[in-house]
Length: 571
Image 1 (spheres, rainbow, N blue to C red):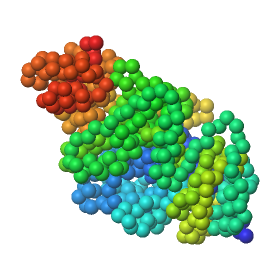
Image 2: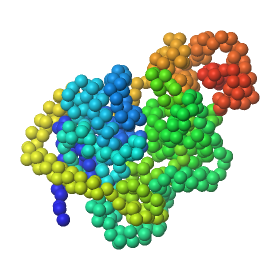
Image 3: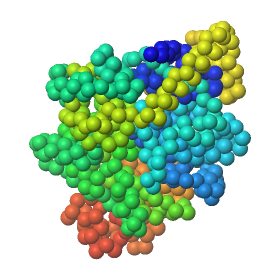
Image 4: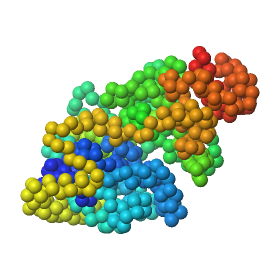
């Protein structure tokens, strides 16, 4: 049996700080995210721009970043034409963030198709106008290929990131962490190690078959399933068990039917969202300013007394009012289809896919319908001990991993050992000089010993903070622009701008008199407002559709929203 050298977290961090491209890997619980966060904090303390991204929205929640698809401007494309590349390279926001970054992090790299990594590489090289791989950015890829594999488009065979041209051109240094910090159970560690080697025996199935009860007290286990239909059944059952009335939030839509169907299919929030107080929920969209991201978990604690929107409490104790959010498709700068819904879904049960990256005290795991490599491994490695695990079922493929990954894992170990040997031959000053040179070349400065550093909260706020989008909308309103003009100017959906306006008036940042600049653009506004007011007196202000229909569908939803804002202010 081959014995691999053990790379520590501090050794990996020293290698990251040299500025070389790095693949940071290791078993679940080995501290990859910890090392990554330490590195990001160091870069921010040094004043070096770092873009923090992940392969999926759920993964992005664990590192306070955004998806690589959104960051690069590639979006949902599965190929990148010269026309697409040219359009991306002329979008000011994308160009600005790609040029501002000195380091690009992509977490959960196992789930990123190699074709996507190649597209990101092209975008970076084009925007930065430099011939080096990724336009000269330091690239940090983080993940474990024993986790869930990428999903290929159009039924193509998935291509792992290490099979891409971008991976080969970047010449990554591999840092393989081996120390275990998540699992506290030697028997479970041994089982996970056997899965990684492809050495599963009958005794392993027997061991899991004996996990029929969770021995931990006062912990509600999360249920993990392979398929959404099982998740939905559990969530609906738990919702029914709760006392109290149901609040239903219906998705609104506008645009071309075929495009809308695609939007609705891919939206994580259901068309009809049913909630009660104490319901466990998961956020389905990013809103950095409000304080949630796709994957944030919480429970419903109340419904707003004025507009009825749900108020959730997150696991860290923050209370957030969840107002509707848009999902839209744009073509040539215009929104061709848009859906709007409260960005939540029930979350007593989740799919194994969405659990990746989580660390759970207790879980009930159903692998009877496991259908792809890595599902069993991901599910079992979420939990710290066998005592916190209940197995609801297994099938013959539950513990299978891709033979290609087993072979590559050997290669990654060898590469990591070579890197460790190289750096172990350097003295401390030589490595420190490399750190200093990298920061200087990136336009930063290493803080002197004892020099004040940003707090963890300040760093998180800086990383998540985008431009003050509410203030920008306010400035446009005060300049007399209409909402459609603001939406066009800011390249945002109309519903997004209306949400800004509603929030600004709620907080008193925009007054009723200032809002009349929007109303003044409508012919016979007073008559329109009188009609809308009468409808709101009868049907209330919680939903737009009853108001719209009560007025004979004479006024578009923009006018209805404006009327509702002014009516609420008057009350």
